[in-house]
Picture 1 (cartoon, rainbow, N blue to C red):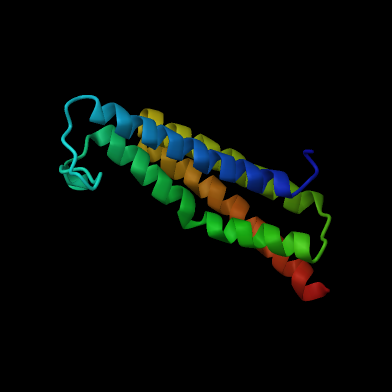
Picture 2 (cartoon, rainbow, N blue to C red):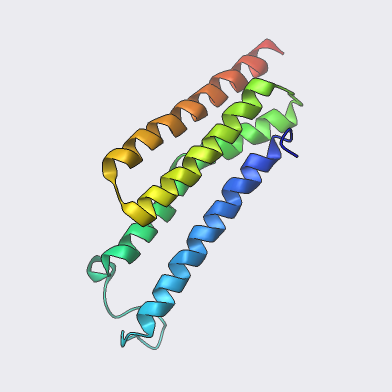
Length: 140
């Protein structure tokens, strides 16, 4: 299982669902605290006035989509051209690991300096995954 390049991609999808669930639970909890809702289901209180914890979770959801599209594309290319590379596999797992850590730090601690450092590591893993994939594509 650890040698299948699709597993880190599935892990990132799972992380996205988990963060979405956390956001949903936080939103539902807010509804139970006397928050008024319009008939359409849209909160009367605009996003800018939402509680900080809800904004942080929502921001993390946005963050998880920003560069992950590149990750998913690269994984698709790797599978399509049938590359078996330990280097690319390690890069994919590192990207997932750093995205998980980034989300935990973002949602639980909101430490911008720590998040920035973790983000740089995740981007480095993604860049190496890109360069490795480009090498295999261009050399085939």
